[in-house]
Amino acid sequence: MSDVPSSPAPAARRGISLPDLLIALGVTLLGLLLLAGSFQIPFGIHAVVGPRVFPLIVSSGTIAVGLLLTVSALRGERAEPAAEEDTDPDAPVNLGAAGIILGGFLLGAVLLPSLGFVLGTAIMYFSVALAFGERRWGLMVFVALVVALVTYLVFTHGLGLTLPPGILKGLL
Image (cartoon, rainbow, N blue to C red):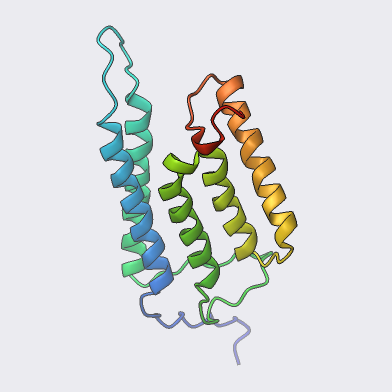
């Protein structure tokens, strides 16, 4: 008998993880959308570093990360939970919470021009609380509105940005 411990058997190759692939493709798509938006920014005439330089850097980096994630997902590699996470990577995926957040984000984004920043982002915040299992509706509405209002005030009064007030015009 040998005292040399045998090396562990190599892990069996798993198939392509659909959630990992969807995340990778989503990151790549986000990078492409950011890149398209970056080219919409007018370039400064007298600026050495124009206003679109940093958005171009961020969008290029996002595309690169998305492509690396896509290649990894197509090779069958999976995102493994950190050691301190108590999860089972082989458990079935529940996309319900992600769907609620995505739906809230899309609804808020579509309604943001007409309702305004405060109400549009409050819808987004509310959907996140709902997706995480909160069921105290009054508290969720109150917190979403307060956080959205504070964000609006910081951006408009603190940073001087122009955000759509929507139906709250005159109150803000």
